[in-house]
Amino acid sequence: MSVAKVRAGAQEEEESSVSARDVKPERNLLAAVLARAICDAFGSAQCDRHVVRSARQWLFGALTPTRAFSFAWVAQHLDLDPVTLQQSLRTYESDPDKLNERLNLLR
Image 1 (cartoon, helix red, strand yellow):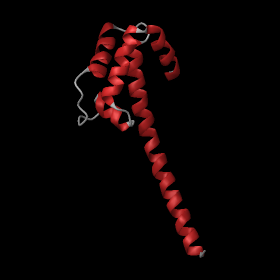
Image 2 (cartoon, helix red, strand yellow):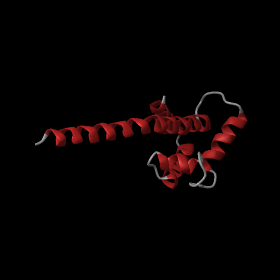
Image 3 (cartoon, one colour):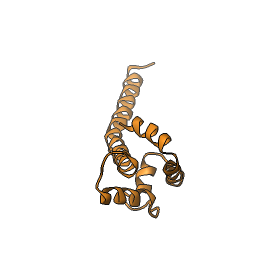
């Protein structure tokens, strides 16, 4: 293999790892936004009622995947299906123990 091919391969690898690094902070931010909303909506911490209501409205409102930072938009950018995620979150209302288990994983 020629030196030029090795250098080209190394450069491609470096560029792909740079692009992967560039995406990670944004994904982490979106994951934190989603986790905070779930904790506010269902967590046992004492939150103002308007915080809980606002979080639940964001989580269970109409799905608007084209609106930046809507629940559906965030879910899709995290490679999650918003409909399935909403359904899963609704089941937690009836099973608080399961919910607390899952919330502990977010902390």
